[in-house]
Image 1 (tube, rainbow, N blue to C red):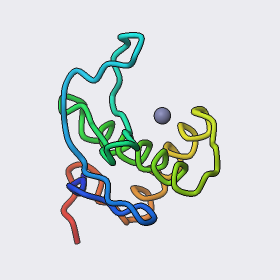
Image 2: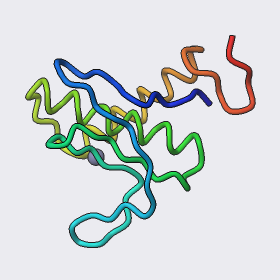
Image 3: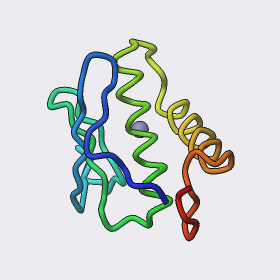
Image 4: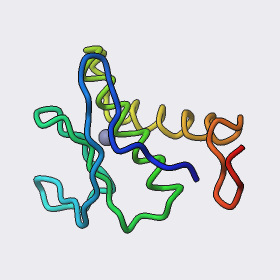
Length: 103
Ligand SMILES: [Zn+2]
């Protein structure tokens, strides 16, 4: 599984990628990740398994892109896109699958 970058650039903004556990929503449910547009930060649960963590990273990056592009995607659309985009990156060799060496 590839290394998740420490920072990503989305439009004109640089989002910092950090790790924390637990990540709690306003209603106290536990989250695997969170995108904070105000502080330009993506937070990931460091106890998640690597493939799940990578999919969460893509999911939160899509939230950042949605915010910058004003596309107003629904949560379900972000979840659907993150699953197919993560699979696309893994299945087509952009990201080495777990246990594989990077080229
Ligand atoms: Zn989401």
